Image (cartoon, rainbow, N blue to C red; front, side):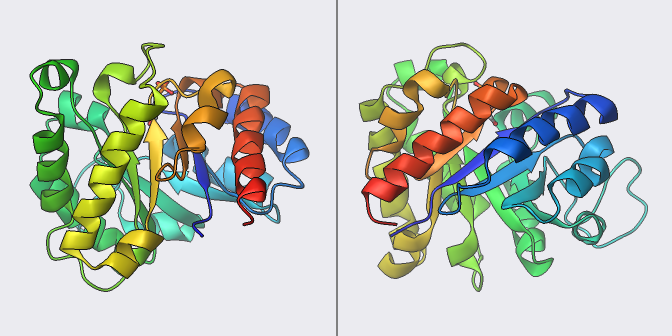
Length: 258
Ligand code: 13P
């Protein structure tokens, strides 16, 4: 049975003080959610402060990006070692906003995934199609190409990877994929993972859904057989909403006997 994972992607929001306040609010409420991995991904500037707040709790720290090299002349970048220094256990890679606004191709996302594994940080690899691609019946083709290219030559450590299916048309739009739409792509992705690695590895990889997940739809989405949690944007900026989503994952996991 896969342990669900709910991660809050705070994107470019929150000053250090605001981040501490948000993380502190979440900390109080989550004391009993032990069968769900809960990850907070604040901006780089707030990693240390949020890490201090959640130290000793069930929550883990995640970053929103990293460079694939170990060090060097890469102005403005941070590497896996620097993130680990701050006790980051996860890193979001290949988010559609980075693909769209910063032109990140699958090739460099693949380098990052491999560097994260080597650096003992769990990559959360984001994939997903645009509205135009969905309407052109290209979802399967696009997601397959992304998964294959981003996981190329990933060997050891594959089972620890987290994949996040985030249909671009559902991100920040309030328009969520239906549980059936999401499940279809999750099942497709798991099949691909079995093809790339093997069935055992594919069965252990968590696949999160992301895109306007909120307290009102989280339970239904996460009760789908191949949806193992959520990558939450907007709703993660509110402690109460985020906690409700974690609780939905907790109850699903408990009812499935995790
Ligand atoms: P929203 O939850 O705001 O749609 O964002 C999803 C997302 O991009 C998480 O990475």
